[in-house]
Image (cartoon, rainbow, N blue to C red):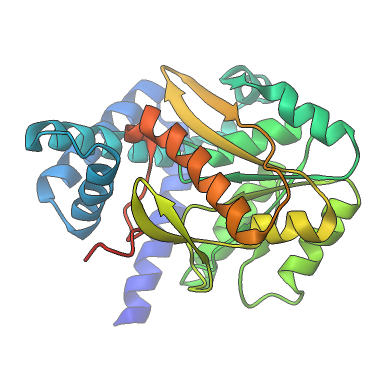
Length: 289
């Protein structure tokens, strides 16, 4: 039965990548917005988890305000998927033209120094678009992806990101030590981007996030300390048709725990300003149910 379910999921994604890109953008946007609103009304587990996470970001929000924020969050989340299915059809000019940056000089100066750069970011807006933009503007991305089931679905996502110019390494089950490969890329002056607001290994370090205990992965800080590559947190948000990428100050190299906390602090600033674009439908706070 599980095999049948996984096969159905894989076929659904395959169909979406085929059909969605062929429809007019306005039609697709309307359909995905309706899907987001329907998902909100169904109030499933992911919706309830998103509401709980957003309550930590906006503890002063009334129940009605929290509902409105959750609905906006689902619309933003479905926008991510809408764009994911259409991004391979965008021209290079569209990918670059739909991005606006804040503090980009921090990133470019660090990259120009030749020691490689690590960018840590949370699940905000569309990080695939950000990765494609980076490659097209002279900084090809190496990244890590969680291994999905079925394997064919994971392969589809790897292929999708490769089409956007990214090197994608599986978090588990690959032929090589992921950390060692990323360290080699950095020593060669490369650009490594890691989504780092949720610990998948259960070996993350404790942080305080929106005043609550959480754990975040050690990878960005550990790689920075191992290779000397500067660590730069980045946050994203949507602004009309644009993706806005904000680069925060370089995290001073100290130790893994402190550097990870500094990333968490930068993430929190970006999320607090644009909570509707934080696509966190999973458990992140240790104190939550």
